[in-house]
Amino acid sequence: MNILAAVDLSPASEKVIEAARGVAELTGASIYVFHVVESDPDIVGDDADHELQRNRIAADFPREDQQLQALEEKLLDQGVDATRWLVRGPAIKTTLKESARLNAGLIVVGSHGHGAVWDVLIGSYSAAIIRKSGLPTLVVPILDT
Image (cartoon, rainbow, N blue to C red; front, side):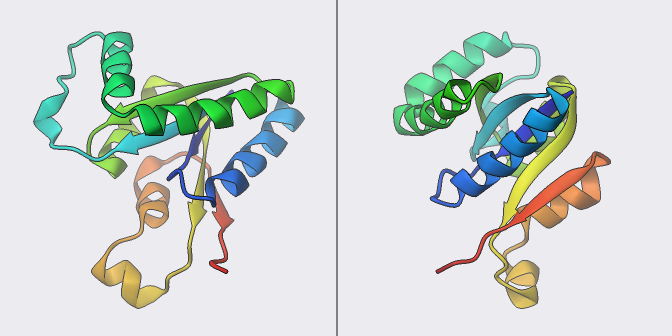
């Protein structure tokens, strides 16, 4: 099984990674440390080489790639198979597409718990993933302190 651990690269990402690590240690799963850089959908075509795309995105977004690499290395140091996965596109659509491509059996996301008004006005990434993915989704509560 593969786990897609979707992180926003905020300090809350550590909690998402820790939850994914716990499941991976129990199941022997591999973790994709996953982040989407929002962009216009026409920037990346579906028929392009995915490894080449990811290398270009890493070059275009070195700070994000370095943060993902740090999370990836932490998991590897703990004996968990992990791969960083930086992609570009609309967050929800891209997450769903990549979870299928990576044969994910579980998606792990964080929830900042802004409340119903925030979710209606701004939207909730975690809620959309739960509604649209069809995969088991572990939502890690993130308390803003």
